[in-house]
Length: 332
Image 1 (cartoon, rainbow, N blue to C red):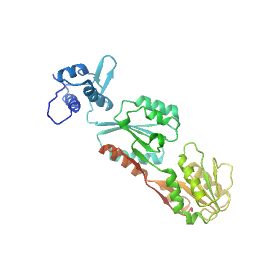
Image 2: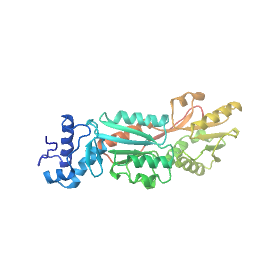
Image 3: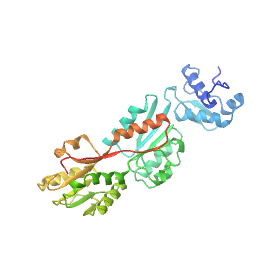
Image 4: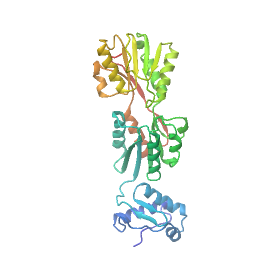
């Protein structure tokens, strides 16, 4: 049984005809799991093709998880699931409610013919390196959250450059890659400028910024706002032993610190929104109701997932700055 068929003047690239031939052979059960494919040299000779053309076809099938290669022996059928047209590697920093929103939105808009494998590096460069190394060459697309990891850009550059997308945070070393990101410097600056009339009723801004997981742009935008508008301010790395002073507004990127500040205020019998203020980062449903409403600066995480899914579906290569907004509530 002839596995591969190539026709001239068909209007379909020859590497694509090889892929379609193998898919049809699998669907017709002429090829089964574990069966060996015609060698690259055999296909080249039979159809007068370049090795690059045949390798391009086999490489795409390999990325989709349909075939695999054994060095020195050839290519074999790995899976008979040919309905999967793309196999996507998705590397997040951690699982939280915001990343869950991105992920669910991405799955909703990417389509049913796509397999998405999700991994987490937990802000660990060794884990990041392992994930990138083990995935390299096994996926049609790579979506990566590099966060603040030193050395992440160099590892990302080992992946197939045409297949990589950057999500959430980017930097100068990754400016050539398409993706969807937040502009943390601009977002926090513009949001606080929008809320300036309320902020001006307080005496001091305090940012709680541990600096490990939080994007550095948050701190940069905060300091720029305070300098431009001559506002008394302080950046602290932890809140644990601090007392809240009346007239302070706390800018809080981390929700654990948000809980600590609210608990301390109750111990000190301070009224949120009157004695002191809070601006939290990243919107969640609970922040609409906790303490009669927490003011937030937040991007639209569902939009982030939708946009990057649409970029992949449409074959678009662009850099999109996701929109952010200030949601003013009783805490300010």
